[in-house]
Image (tube, rainbow, N blue to C red; front, side, top):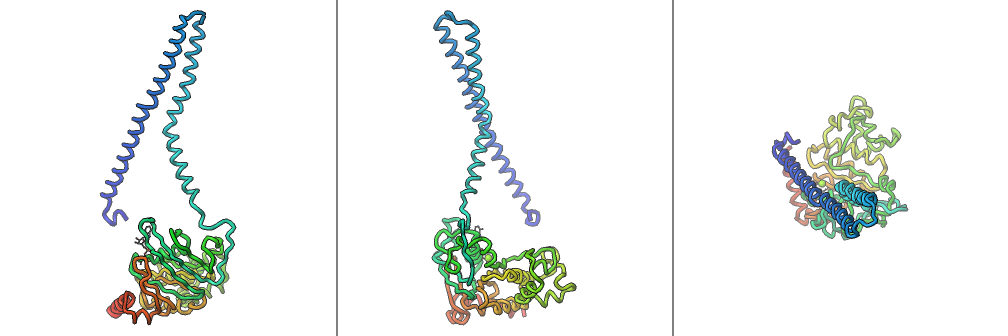
Length: 368
Ligand code: ATP
Ligand code: MG
């Protein structure tokens, strides 16, 4: 990466910079130790010695044996020596304090799930209520966003890059917690759903799905031990059954290192099959940004249309044609809902959606 972007020089500079700062900090620490701690203790040592000798001297050594004086001087050493040891460990102590505070910061991070959470995802209705969230709280990415998705609904989300589409899914997946507002599934807050029920109830098709260097079957099964029937059903629902059969070994064909044999659209279809194989009630799809040829685009669209009504579908679309049939299309703009409606309504509205749609149609015609 560094070499490809010709950035070695810049990074070497940054590395030097960091080293230099570390060196200076170390030096300051050593200086502080040298000036403050050790000499201070030596001074204490000497002062104690003076005090002892002085108090004996005041009594003019009358009746005090030299042995007793010697013992006292020895005691002073015993008092001071542990103090010296402590100062020597002082730097380590400080490091330990810092390390401990970091560990406790992690430990204090609240669990996403409440203990004793026993909620289930039965129907798959999702509601976002007055959601405000920013990766840095002072820069919200989503502003006071509310959205109701009925069980079995098909919602398409569109919007310019950076408008907060993936962020919305990340919140629903409990990757982050909103600063304000609630997310409910079937009327229950997200935290009240157990991890197992949560993972079983929600299927995710990420923007850049990862395929294993294994067979098609293993890529759909993902170690869940599903039956051949279940795997084929999922593949059919995602419209990759035919594609897989057309490979030389059918379901046993190797997909190549991270799916190198497949186009990115086909990878996404396999990822849809993988998600569907878990029989989720809610399917989240973050569509691949580019490189989908219009044929796969059509396959994705058909797969979604066939699933519509059976499970709740939330699909982030970059190719608007894949969500043409959605019940509701949400247009996000800078973290707010700018337009809502189905395809016909939004086209008639003549806003952002219409512009995006016409633009993509022109591009597709250019390619054809
Ligand atoms: P795209 O169409 O390119 O996928 P998007 O609508 O999915 O865009 P998001 O990924 O939700 O956009 O990002 C919304 C905003 O949040 C952007 O300004 C982005 O820079 C910022 N952002 C996203 N992820 C993070 C993160 N992990 N940390 C900090 N900021 C982030
Ligand atoms: Mg995104």
